[in-house]
Length: 186
Image (cartoon, rainbow, N blue to C red; front, side, top):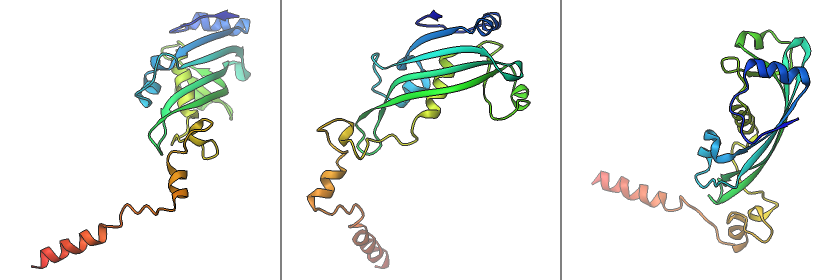
């Protein structure tokens, strides 16, 4: 087992060695260092981290594989209330490593593949790709857990429903359209 905080690239020779030995790498990534994830949350801080375990092995068809397990949380913005929302991440996937797209097309199904960049594995990119695929398309606080925290709010929706007030954002539109028609007729 090899533990490291940052491994930027794993070359083809080292990759072959890791696969041959069935090695495991435990890595940690600040969410702010993952460009595409950091762009999803303008308020991402240094405290948000993802831990990743890469377990290398030789797979079927003689291709190297990596069992990737990612855990942590990604700070996003709730699309209901626009407040911060920490989305838990739990990824567990088996990936087959290929050097070219043509190799991926030739694999028997059902294999998920990772295309090596110039024959090298870029762990941060693999983690970021898998986490992005696992995130909800529309992050929002849970309806059963108010505001995502005990005693919190439910994005204002429950208060509005319980107040008895009817919110009609387009109620005045007819009046505005009616006035506009009369002005054009004169």
